[in-house]
Length: 203
Image 1 (cartoon, rainbow, N blue to C red):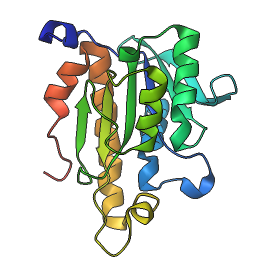
Image 2: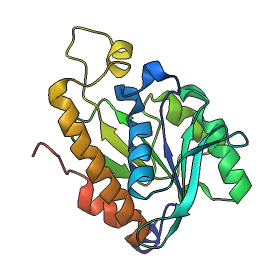
Image 3: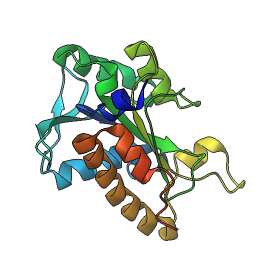
Image 4: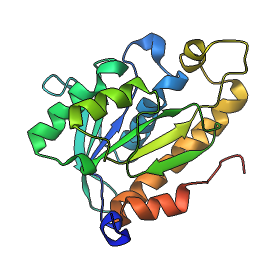
């Protein structure tokens, strides 16, 4: 893609990844859900269950005037693609119009990274979405959840909750993630990448 074409990629569907049961609420692996909850709150777009889309869904207008849809799949992480595909088929959206927000252990807590495409990197939710969308050319926003301290395994880490010290950082990170998404809606994914990639709440 040329810079000119990438600058024009504007999300129409924003998906947050997580698991639906209360026991997963506020876990590291559910940071995508938390980000979409924050967008729904700031934009005053209440999420409601939509059985056709197998998820919690909202549709409305973002602060910059762009029409946008929010989605939290209720399929469990490893079947997230079913829900995303249901929405893209219904609204006839291209994969490039889908922005997926999810957790990344390779990024420290407080870091964001936006990309136009990429592999699943071992993330089961992303594997499912790539399979259902037929490729990996869709934008994503990864939110750092940090690595395990070595005292517990990967699964225990991602399904665990943030420490009290990390919780404040995460609140600030979610605030910044809203700003990053809003910029991508107003000026395109690439502008948001240039401004927020490398940004750290802890810097």
